Length: 325
Image 1: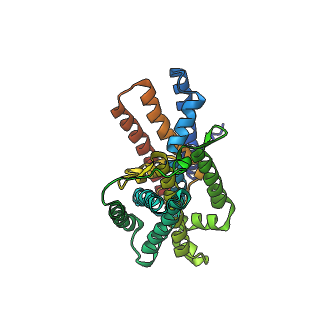
Image 2: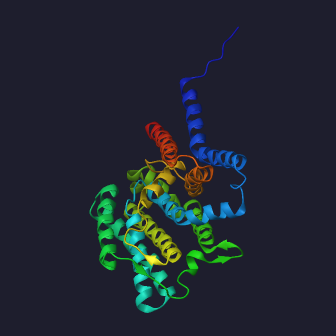
Image 3: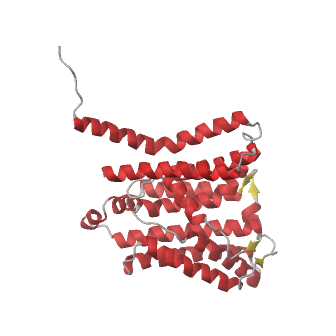
């Protein structure tokens, strides 16, 4: 009689595969499960109006998270997205107010975001400063710039057409939702279907190996930070159009929510692993938790506790993956 044993290496491979599967699909499973639970708990949840409002309200955050996926996959962090959002918001309002053109003003936000994002990339690559510290410092600079533009006050815009981007609809779907879908689709293709996307993974997976293989690591990093700034600017244009005023405090906490959603979606904090669709799912998982607590009338303090616990579990999973690597 013989006994069958599993070699240690085989056990490690099996465990590794299981962890990879959990990382890849946990956010989707949780999102579906939460949708089912809320649908059964209250009839007001699973309605087209409520679901469309959830997507519309969280579209700016999702856009930032999509671009943030590139940054984190490349092995970096961007803590300045909220500040770039604020600068973009007040700049869009200021330009619109002084030119009388809503289109010009709203276009200012993504253009300015692109420039500020590239500035972050250059600060990280040329000054050789860790992205965490570089973007923390730039966030203070950008936040101060937002205050200087407004003088600390709101810039209210009443120009015709300014609110169309944030409130307008096409076929019953908000423009912001359409922009999110298009942006996410384009970024998904760029990450998974282009040489640039493969280089982003390579840089995050092993920067030294990427250099030896001929990849311009600095160029990749500047581009991913520029994309992050562009996304913050697009989100700012949507946000300022929606509320009709530029505020220097706009977007407070956006950077942490975006990073939380990306990590919750299974993107490794060590870089080299991630997916755009999972980051979007992470955004809406957090959104559904909040929406569920609101419509069920539960204690909002417990919402933060539950969200924090889920994010902590996601970070722990990422950390275990990093130790295996």
